[in-house]
Length: 184
Image (cartoon, one colour):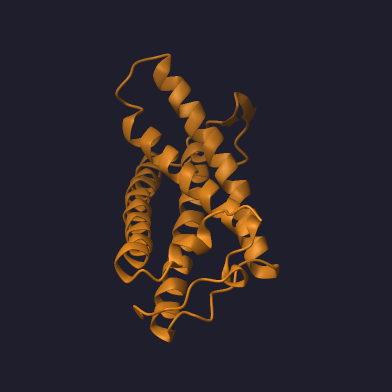
C-alpha cells in the first residue's frame, strides 16, 4: 500500500460494464439484506410485499451475478498494474470470497424457497418449484445458512468499502476512482 502511488490514469479504470455490475450488485445486496432483516416487523399485506420484493430482487441478483461471472471470465476487469503484489492478493482474495458467498447465498435462497414447496415470485409472476419438498430440519438448516451467510457478505462488503475509503482518503492513492463512473 504505497502512499505515493501515481494518479490513476483512464486506462487503469474499470470498464463501464464492470462498474455498472459492481454497483448494481452492491445496491441489490443492501436492499436484500434490509428486506430480509425487517420483513417480520410489519403485518400483512406489507410483509407479503416485502417478501415478493426480496424474491424479485434475488432473481435480479441471480442474473447480475451470472453476467458478472461471464464478463469477468471473458473481457472485463483486470487489476491495475499500480497495485503492489500484497494489494493484488488482498483484492483478489476479497473478490473471490464475495463472489463465492454471493453465489452460495443465491443457491441457498432458491433451495429454501423451493424446498419449502413455494414458488419464486418475480414481480408477482410465479416460478413454481422444480424440487420435492424438503424435511423441516433441512429447511431450518438452509434458512440458518442463508441468514448467517447474508451477515457474512454484508460484513465483508462493509470491510471492502472501508478499505476503498481508506485508500481514497488516508493513502490518497485514488484507488476508489477506478470504480466510479466518469463521463468521457
